[in-house]
Structure formats: structure tokens, C-alpha cells
Amino acid sequence: QQYPKNYVGGAENASEIGAVVRDFSQSIGSYDRAWMCLHPYWADTRAVGIYAGQVGWEQVLPPDQLAQLTGDPRPLLIVMHPQGADCISAARALFPTGTLTLRHSARDANHDFLLFFVAGTEDLDESTLPAP
Image (cartoon, rainbow, N blue to C red):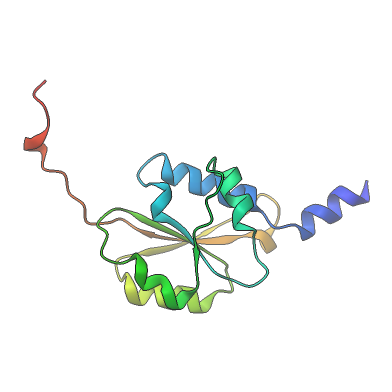
């Protein structure tokens, strides 16, 4: 009875992060526009990809390389560790219209994580849609 409680308290919540990545990718975003900002000893990105339904997804960048994500007009999601101040400041500098939210974990507050969302600038020209 003690093992499950101890395991849940110590294991990272790749399943919760993966669910967010999956939901973003299957709704307004895509798997190639969902990233994690590198934080030491945090969730295993391989496991996040498996839980997201995309085996092989391991999209993680250190804060000093987030600039690689600029220039694409599609929506962007960056998952961050709550103690990743360097990730937050880098994302805010690169994407001033982005929004930062706290995602509460079902496990406990020690497993909460941050979501930095950039809506993107892509705008569909409705005149290009096929006639009904």
C-alpha cells in the first residue's frame, strides 16, 4: 500500500503533459508546434510523446534555443517547469503576445506545470474556401 503512494509522489507526470500535447496537436495546433523547455531532472520527453499518442516525439529545447521557434505563423505551445524562470523569460522576450498559464496536476501541487501559448498570426482568407 505504501509503494503506489511513494511512486506517485516521486514520479514525474509525463501522462498529464502528454495529454496536453495531444489535445493541442489534435485541435488548434500540431505536434511539430508543441515543445517542452528543457529543465534538469524533469519529465522524460519520450514518455510524454507516448502519452501524447506520438511515439518518437521528443521536442525539447533549452531556453537559449527557443528562438528557433519564431517565424512560423501557426499556434505554438511550450510546456515549462514552474521553476524554469530562464524558459519563461526567454519565451516572453521572443513571443510578447504569448500567454502563460499554470496547469494544476491531479497528483499534487509539486507536479503542476506551465503552458506558454502563442496564438499565432495565421489568418485564413475565407474567399479561398470552396462554395457550399
